[in-house]
View 1 (cartoon, rainbow, N blue to C red):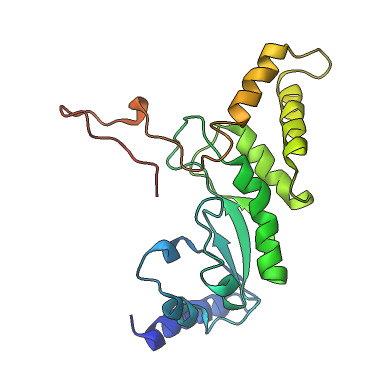
View 2: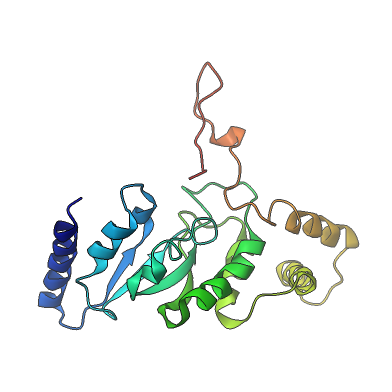
Length: 210
């Protein structure tokens, strides 16, 4: 926890990278900073000896627990706003269209030039495709109004199921229900029976809430 030691550790890592590539840019997950160990003073010291422009931090779980406001946009380093969404390949229906819609612009407004992109950092694929399509579009547009978000959802359903044929109104209604419930503001998902570990007491479950 010595501040000088933390600064020297990071400096040593970066100097080693430069020995291999003098133009190296260190891309580092900011996930570790969720730990209570990482106070503002410790993070500031830890990042202080890497020259600005030579490090990009991945704010890994920005849709639920963004770290950039805690650490003043990572004290002059560039960072990417990321949607993590999926822990360990969990495949229940969940997501936060609201947070992913508003979060990147909020980061740009707060951090200015230091927020340089939008990314996805999921631990599993082939689930909840709506969230990943929506997240990756955030690099190209401003936040959608509620009405525009509803329209985007309709267009997503059209792209998903057909190119020219009419979509049954019941299917559109079902997706509107999903968009206003499990995909509205639900970044953590929920523990489900299928994620449970075998146990006689019925209490063992894999939690996806961080």
